[in-house]
Image 1 (cartoon, protein in one colour):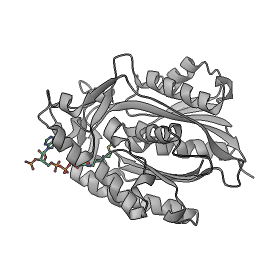
Image 2 (tube, rainbow, N blue to C red; image 1 turned 90 degrees about the vertical axis):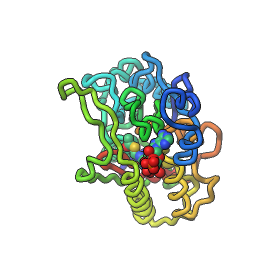
Image 3 (cartoon, rainbow, N blue to C red; image 1 turned 120 degrees about the horizontal axis):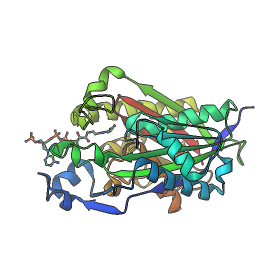
Image 4 (cartoon, protein in one colour; image 1 turned 180 degrees about the horizontal axis):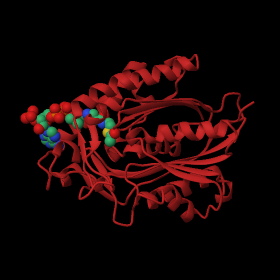
Length: 322
Ligand code: ACO
């Protein structure tokens, strides 16, 4: 029987510097009221120069290993989801590997924007199920503050920096269905021009800034995420009533509320961190998961539904028995 991927430990890291909407409004043509009303965001963390994706990913990974009671020697592989890597190569995952003192196994970065963590979880789960690894760190780490266009008030107020990580351990579990029950990932490249970064290391004189057609993304987000959530429930012959917690991508409070309503989940069963973190892209789901795990809301044995959508378009869901 194939192994299950147990979420053995969860960790996170947030940069020290907190920037409120009011502080942002000193340099950007915006107001606290507009940002709160349209998005729910009240503040975000912005990284200092040393707080790169590798640095933050390492700190989150250390916390996840400690939470699992695991050692660097238990790590067979590291998958790090990011759109803001430290360098084109080596992969940021390998900077993390070196910083942790992990000396074996594989490591690579995965680029799937805000759905990166769900994608990475899906890949890691498949590798564990097919016996290729027994202990995998799945990390989302982002420094979007470095790719924001400060002249575009429609996007620069929406994002923040941070990292989250889980340590997956192969095991049959304590309960019959503990671990990742399923993941579903999707992509539609024809929608690549509604949310993208207009440059990259490979393009001359174009480091790149984030561009988003917010309304269109919003419309697709609500539809696609609802489909991904239903797909997860159907695949496991479960209904929304079985779900203890929804841990959604933290892009916009209105999208999150719409998803909660669609599922018929009481608002207190939806984990929301967008007020404090803003949109941290691939880090947003593990950061939210970590918060609700650390404060004791999410408990072992409970059923948790994760979902995210990002530039690509890419989207997906994961259903996990903690
Ligand atoms: N402050 C003040 N006014 C603003 C700001 C701002 N920061 N930004 C835009 N406005 C103005 C606009 O200029 C416009 O003014 P006008 O009516 O005079 O022309 C008005 O506010 C409305 O602008 P819209 O862009 O239409 O506002 P909308 O209600 O659509 O909200 C938002 C914008 C918050 C971006 C929303 O569309 C959204 O959340 N979209 C989805 C984002 C998402 O899900 N992203 C997920 C993936 S992210 C990733 O993968 C990297």
